[in-house]
Amino acid sequence: MITVKNLAKKYGDHFVLRDVTAHISQGEVISIIGPSGTGKSTFLRCLNLLEEPSGGSIVVDGEDVLAHNFSRPKLRQKMGMVFQAFHLYAHLTVLGNLTIGPVKLLGKSQQEAESTAMELLRTVGLSEKAQSFPDELSGGQKQRVAIARCLAMNPEIILFDEPTSALDPTMVSEVLSVIRLLAKDGMTMAIVTHEMDFARSVSTRVFYMDEGVIYEQGSPEEIFENPQREKTRAFIHRIRSLKETITSQDFDLFALHSHIERFCAKYTVEQRTVHNILLVVEEMITHLLLPLTSGEPHISLTVEYAEKQGEFRLLFDYGGAANNPLVSTDPDCLSLRLIKGMSKSSNYSFVQGVNQISLTV
Ligand code: ADP
Ligand code: MG
Image 1 (cartoon, rainbow, N blue to C red):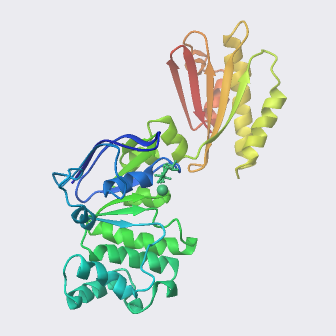
Image 2 (cartoon, rainbow, N blue to C red):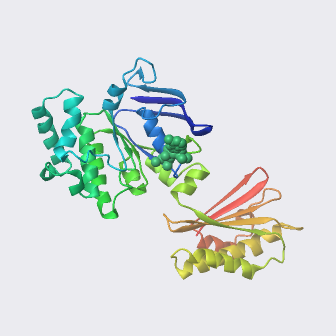
């Protein structure tokens, strides 16, 4: 339905979109996620040509929309857009907001437009508000009207730009429910959102945008459960981390413990978990890793907290030849048994001269 190739957009010398390539098929629900300022809105606005792309191509239903003779009003009718700030006509009633487009742009009769409008208002649960003006409505109601107005133009795809970001938290779910309903009816949609649980449950695919590109894309399971790239992973798990380096056999274990305790204290975790982390770190460093190095050691420890899973990940990086003490040590070794007993999972890799052990606690 929509094929975007090498799309670029720059403001002055600043490239917001560097090279975006994507395909959206009919019936798909695409969630677009990513940090602020990474071009998510710009991407949507380029799709329906509210912004002029600086390069690349956009093909919609087989037609090159950037061609000189392509009708932009026709494109905007095909692609409805719902904005964070509703953009309703304040001087028109709810019904007026829904009928003006179909009457003026689609050439429908007033009567036909009103009957469709009333049906759409029932769909979004607002038929009682047909005669109200926008400023008599709550934020959630305004956004539902904006969605109904968009549907009144009979679009083939709807672009949503953070449709719930301007809402009071109590009103988010009424708007998300309407979007879910549209998804169930098979509407094709691209939704920029910070509502991760929603994105995860409603989407067929997720685009993670960063660095001016679609940095990673995949099914909700792939992106939310098992992101492949570091930035995606950091974003999804909102990982915050503590980094420590050990460069002496006589390193200060007490200082290390207190740094880890302070880091853990930022999150509401059980004291027992903190205790387990301290024990695993101590055993790993003093009994397994330091004995591997004869001279000056160089061990870096990263402690990451994944809020979503409520899990800590401990990463130990160290140099030297490939050596995994988790398997090479005597299986009766007490340290090893403690570490294995307290970790939910462990993984060893040796990449470009660096050993890495990753443990989750
Ligand atoms: P997002 O929606 O992911 O938060 P945007 O697409 O709104 O990001 O913006 C991406 C970048 O482009 C930001 O750095 C923003 O300041 C810049 N930008 C957006 N619109 C304009 C504009 N009209 N003129 C200049 N810079 C802009
Ligand atoms: Mg935005």
